[in-house]
Image (cartoon, rainbow, N blue to C red; front, top):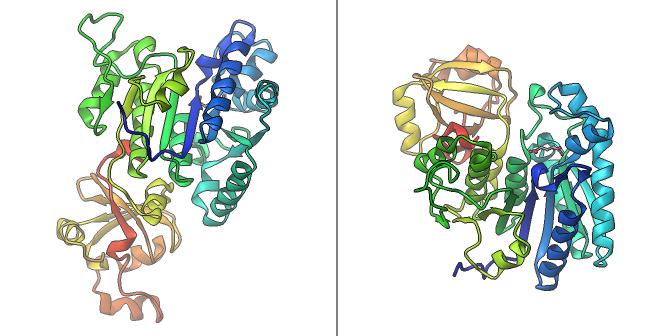
Length: 375
Ligand code: GLU
């Protein structure tokens, strides 16, 4: 049995496939999810729902038969489909005496401390009143092309779970969990009920499987589990087609794949990791070694800078060979760093004027992250 005794707050993400039917939305599925959420609420849990489906529903309203790829059309579809999605949730929740709320997010809303704090307070208020907040990405204003998007709702749900201190993230999908191979083709493929850490080998299972059936966006789910794990939040990837899936997960049963939480990062470290970066600073080997020994980054160790950023922004730190080293909050902007790179700290005053800090960032402003995928 899994030990979920510490779980109070749960984020549940529902994918488009799970909700889709020939007619548009699978009303029975929506009803089943809402009924189970009502049950979890009765068991004393706080529940936040992250639901996809706006683009798909909008496309169906417009009579599109194929996947919508054109960005502006996807945005238009999201604008049309989002109220339809909410209508169905509202109707289904009403049957169980639950009020639903809509929360549309962009990545910037989480990056910016003020909007993030506003979000935390309003979500806490909603939860304290017993309302179920239903999140979706604000697709109408936020797209990958301008760097404001989460990219997918798996990732968004993990970031939401991390930011609002959930202890459990449940990713409901159309397959049973993570298999070691493609269960349709490989008779030896087994379902992994428990994963300690999302290692590259584990990610390889998702990539190797190769069919829509067995992957079903499994890689993005594992990336999401990584983000959640860093916030001390466990993840379960399970099939939303199992009638009592949510309740059985919370009873600790072996439903789907359970991914353990890992290291506990502080709020600030999580904020740094989950923030989108505005540029990169390239450091030489000596500086990288110093950073590994928890020293500050000095200008003398910087060999390159790219992107345009302000002091106080989050930037990537890269080694000379291009490898990612980590993410940090810089105390200087990109122009100042290009002027000062390679120079000694005692030249700061003469090059940039007085009143600056003596290093680019201190150890507490850096989080070492070697894995590109988790960013
Ligand atoms: N926000 C998109 C929608 O509501 C879904 C994104 C995703 O599926 O990850 O259709």
